[in-house]
Image 1 (tube, helix red, strand yellow):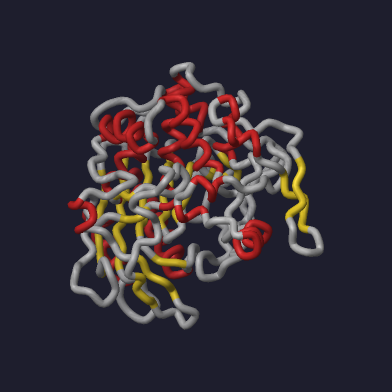
Image 2: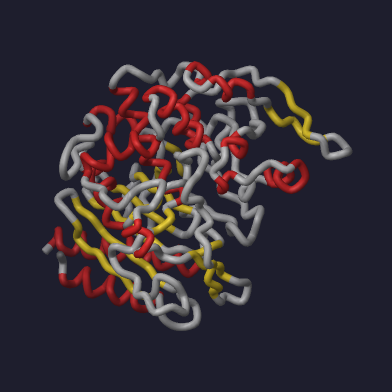
Amino acid sequence: MNPGLTSSLNHLLDTVTAGQQRVPGVVAAITGRDGLLYEGASGQRMSGQAGAMTTDSVFAMYSTTKAITATAVLQLVEEGRLDLDAPARTYVPMIGELKVLEGFDSDGTPRLRAPKNHITTRMLLLHTAGFGYEFFNENYNRLVQEQGQPSVIGGSLAALKTPLLFEPGEQWEYGSSMDWAGLVVEAITGKRLGDVMRQRIFEPLGMTDTAFTMTPSMLQRRAGMHQREEDGSLTAIEDSIVSQEPEVHMGGHGLFSTVKDYCLFIRAWLNDGQGDHGRILRPETIRFAEKNGLENLKVKALPGVIPSISNTAEFFPGMPKSWALSFMINEQDAPTGRPAGSLAWAGLANLYYWIDRKNGIGGFWATQILPFADPVSVNAYLDLETAAYRHLIHQASS
């Protein structure tokens, strides 16, 4: 590990967990192609409690789950068992029953019509199928508030049976598509998504602390959830928001894991699909999956419809961003030093990662704070990424 990078990032973590505008606890890591370049932890697992945050602390991973689900999908594509462009109802018939939401009648009743286009698994991975989230879309929030639509965070099958927000394939909207992609994987393999991931991804990569249901050891190391109040203070939330025994293994948000485990996954993507203990994807599949799949569509800002769950969020505002299978792509060099064409995404409780295949570097920042796009968390994560590139460039030139 680079002593200068270690010192710089340890200071960053210690600074962001102290003072008035802080995070209660954080774990962060930087990985190269050959192993970790940095890992550190600071603060507490739960605000006001004695347990220190450690590098093996366990987090609810939220949407950082999505890329792992996409990897399971791509494995089935490699094997010829899944056609990305076939109607997804070929594998999961109930997705073909969903209708498009055209608006609401004067009494609040949703107006629905049959879609003209079939939803494909490619659309699910690209977020062009028509699904959304109630905390990013006002129409979905109306369905939850007025029509009794269950929240997707609950992990129920009923929560996935939502109307489509637009004709499949015609827009980009971030939402529950990857939960449906997980159901496609289950339908083809005949196994629960967590079992598929364990056998085909976690074991080949050595990811021993990643699952939809935590082991007793993981439970002992779990970081607690927090709410950032309007005055900037933090309130501990006693119960985990993500269900431990979900009806559906939600491929969009349901995993628990550690930063070290996720860096094993990042490293496999840096190394053309080759993990520390086995291969999960072929090099040509990685190269296919990292390309922009949106054509002329662009990734949009995520509006904060429910302020307690998410602020309005956009990475690198003003910069064009597209979507791969299944990551955000920055189409221009980022101010942190991340080059154009890199892959990245995030999780609702202020977890952030990036994968720079050009330079062979990636990183992960983990906290457990709502709402999403917490300014303290985001700015510190960007500082982490900037410091990593500053030391990488200095090392390469010296």
